[in-house]
Every structure is written in C-alpha cells, then in structure tokens.
Image 1: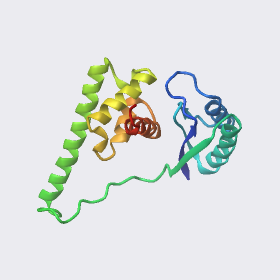
Image 2 (image 1 turned 45 degrees about the vertical axis):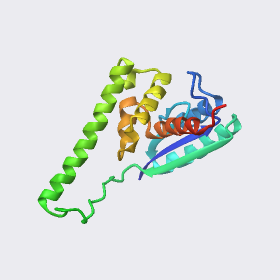
Image 3 (image 1 turned 90 degrees about the vertical axis):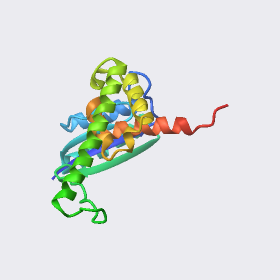
Image 4 (image 1 turned 90 degrees about the horizontal axis):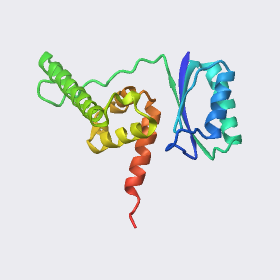
Length: 187
C-alpha cells in the first residue's frame, strides 16, 4: 500500500525564503530514508510505501521537535485510493435521468470553468503563471482567490494547489493564516 503524508510544523516562518531548522531537519530525515519530500515553510509532504513512509515520518517528526517545532499537524491518506465524488441527490427535478446527469455534469463544468477564470484573472493581475511566482506572491494569489470566493467551490484547494505548484496542505495553511489575520481585531 502507498500512502501520502502531509504535515506542518510550527512555529510558522512563511514570509521569507529561509526555512526554519525544524522544517529542514525533518526533510533531511525523510531523505535519509530514501524519500523525496515536497517541503515548504508551512507544510511538508511525502509519498511512498506505507511501511517506509510511516517509519520515516516518525523519525522526521522527532527531528522537527528536537529542532524547535512546538506543534505538528499531520494527515495520512491512502495514495492508491480512488477519490470519487458522491452522486447527486435525487431531490432535484430530473435527477436520476439522463437529463439530470447532464445537468449535474454541466454544473460541475461551470464551477470548474469559473475557478479556471479566477485563476487566469489572478495570473494576469500578478504578471505570470502562479507556479512561477515567488512564495510571497503565491501567498498573495491565495489571498486574492479567497477574496473572490474561489475556495467556496468544491475541491478548489486541489486545483489552486496544482496551479501554484504547492501541496493542498500548504494552500490550506496559507488560507488559515489569511483567515486568522482577518479575524484579528484592529487597533
């Protein structure tokens, strides 16, 4: 079985290009186990054989803690699992019929097209493909997309993460920081 593990270590240091010791130490532990981690200041992810990944992540988290991490948040997913969308409910007119299925597919396409348009607009505004932007501009892109409602769409974080060249977990961390900052009272 293959698994994918994504974890964040705190404190966050996401505003500059220097990764904190708890991030680099955990990544090195993963590399020592023969894995290729995808890392950033707000999240690290790795995928591979379950036995290898689970053992390596255990060592990596101990390294993170011994190098200054004060908190770790982790998710583990079966990388081989096929993700499927739930079927539309039968309460709407035409559901269950060919027309209902076409309507549902059309709605999904409309949402996907809407998200694509939002991403294209932000790319145009920021001057290039999101994946090529420096970290601070990627964070700004997430802020712009959040302000424009992009993350209200189902599975949008995955699409945005792909466009940014980041993990979904990192996009969620950027969103959490943006939302936390917005919730803070102003003086």
